[in-house]
Amino acid sequence: QVQLVESGGGLVQAGDSLRLSCAASGRTFSSYTMGWFRQAPGKEREFVAAIRRSGTSTYYADSVKGRFTIFRDNAKNTVSLQMNSLKPEDTADYYCAGGGSIWNIAEPSQYDYWGQGTQVTVSS
Image (cartoon, rainbow, N blue to C red; front, side, top):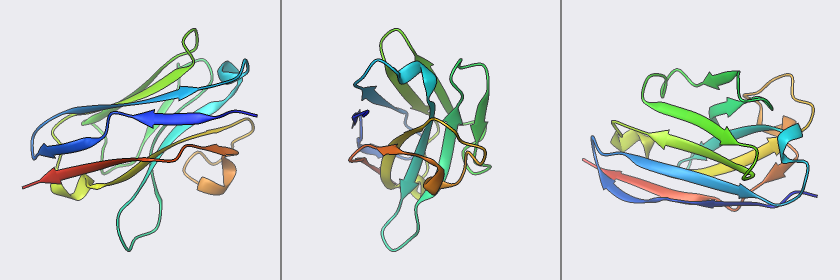
């Protein structure tokens, strides 16, 4: 079992930056693909970014490409999401997720473990 705990959310203004972090328990963190998803009120959960086990392969939703960066530290069991140039449409609850065998990194059902989420609000 893996437990994921997100932190770093908050209220910011458009154009500001935030860094979300996800701390994972367990000794098998390095074997998981990790992802970030978000869910805005009244909308479905959507893919934001993902990173493979070694950290050499990263993936981004078109809406965040060039603004967000995902990275991981397998020695510290953490995965982070650096969010720059935030927009009001980035407002959502952000979730960290992990999975062992993922062939569609943008599909939430592919992930086995989920955190409780952290709220990000971007004011205009």
